[in-house]
Image 1 (cartoon, rainbow, N blue to C red):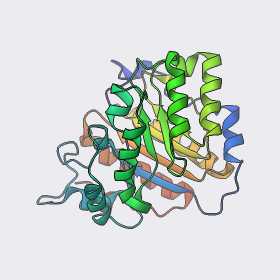
Image 2: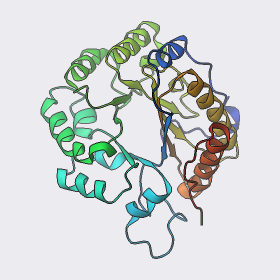
Image 3: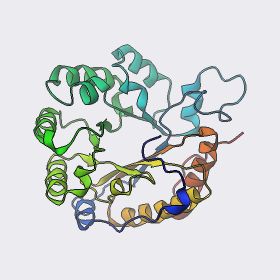
Image 4: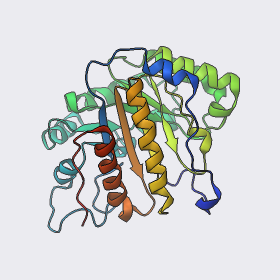
Length: 289
């Protein structure tokens, strides 16, 4: 993830902000009937993007990937709408507890900017729904030029969105996170419609580490730096997840992004091991070569 890169990570305050007051309210709004579901993964299963991850001779990358991680932030769906049959094929190649978190296609987000895209939404969901119970939260990522001046487009999009499919939103224009009146209206819109406000932990955009949940789920995109400080950042996230779990968090999706992906498996292994130790979970610990 190039978004939010900085020249010198050591100059950035990497600590996580305290939770917004609304976070505890959202977490305690619904009694949890099952243990916290934790999804951990990368934005791709491509062998090219994950060097030193696949054993030599691996032919089906998705099949192997899904033995090591229980989910994927599926960025490939941003570039085109795959046919329903393709999603059904991916469904059949993965274990029962695996989850896909597809990014909405760029035709909706970047080209039409949420304007007049009902038909595309229907087409996307018709295809992705073939993942059945393996379909996790779908997420919308908007370009930085999409500002609060287009708030009406966002409202209309959310009003049309079928509420049976969980949705998360990442808005990158700074005003969504710094303009006080906009921030309040935006988060209220998400909360009223059961939509997650994505937390993007990127060193160059600390405004997006808002720690304001709008549902009792959390969707986190972690941009690593290839710097030892990433392990400190992971520790901080473990502490926060433990706290959220105690407050009633039902689900967290945590995806790791890194510019030089060779370190990703090591960082992910550390993260999963710490989760298992602190929360008593039994997540599979990814192998590293």
